[in-house]
Length: 217
Image: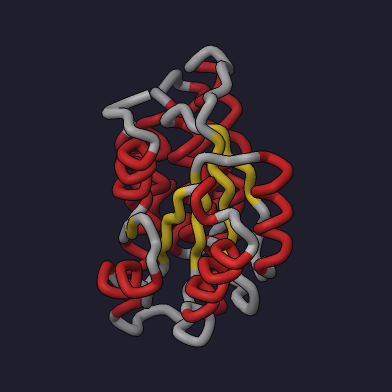
């Protein structure tokens, strides 16, 4: 098991699609807890990749490639995770989006995956999402939480734009707003009036639980 977990982490960091999918499938076939695969294999790999990005050891094309492999890998792990918890849906809906102008969704995808495995229902709007689409989705689905991700320093200010539009349109009191992304800080979250900030996927799950007023789902 450990060898395949290590292989999965290496494959995700290097964006080796075949190796990642193969390691994940072997782990599932061996009956390994899918939560363990996500947390000890996939999440750790993405955390390490994020640290490499901060140190300047990898660049955006590599991060984007890893994000694509993560998404494909999660597509085979997630159904097993959901089946393991009985396929029950939560009353707590989270809408996730990478904000307008930003095409990077690695962090968002990882947070969404971990939220789902923790019992939340997740509606992912994708990347480069404008504020009006976020508002329309809130109006339609009435989520408990909206998660706004931004990886680029040039797109981080759009998180504030979304919050201001939510206020202007009368939706701010209806939904909690979480923000995250490599350049985002707790101070920024406080400044723009967000309800919370998380630096990684496990923290995002704990924050989401706090925002819906539960210790656990």
